[in-house]
Image (cartoon, rainbow, N blue to C red; front, side):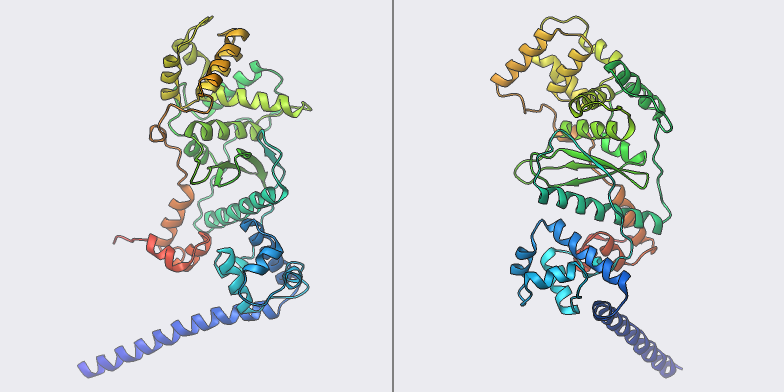
Length: 397
């Protein structure tokens, strides 16, 4: 009996091993097959992927050619991107490695295109920077939506202004809009502990990228899905929590409100006012600050900053908008800040407010640990190599 069981174990092991190697062979065979045969659809999709991958890396065709350690010219790469020829399996693996992407990236069938975008304040980005940001956003949203569909966890956008045709013309309109948002999302008039998690909870997809200092944020509606992109800075200069909170709500204003045919400068000013009004409700601000102030102490502003997560500059601007200080006081204080080197200084430590994005990662880890998707699929959705992704997953059973 024991001998029979031993023989059965060997048979099962051989079957399992055969299946494993068959799957791996099939995977690599598919790479070769998809690279050498196929219809127009596959060719177009692969071409679009190649273009997007290169743009996400922020490099030119010439730079990509130089980084590849195989003899692939700029002209050959250009043909790949225009669908005039296809790279073979080896070439595609090399391209993926240079661009820091898994090979699976090039064979996702779903492609989402970004709609019109709104840049906050800075519009003098280089074309290559703009293309890089758009490519990263498109890829991120595509992966996000696919993950939501796989685990049946879509979150619709909770838009309090849906169907409204009202045009925002003044700061009074902005105050009403900010109050409407807080009431609809049941925020009361208390400080918002985390703006980014709040927006995620109400169906806004948020993506942080490392971009030049000249870029703060952008927003777009993609197939009815709101997307906000924020600059997280780089290792040398991270953007402050206050700036993230303010920028996110500024971009939300672009998504929610209608401004008619106003000039860009006026629209930006109204979006600034909306962000300040949501962060610091009028009645609470007056309770803290008082009305008709002639002088202000920095310590007062720091206390408001610490409690509401809004920068000193934004507090002063809000006080001016609400006519709590005069034009002269507003101007004098900004001059003082500038002279004392405080214009970009922030007074709140990042740990005071929860501005970390987590929904995508939560859904991804849940999907893998619950067995809804494989680790390989999880790595693909995370745009990570399988080995490094596996190191992150610690299943507790």
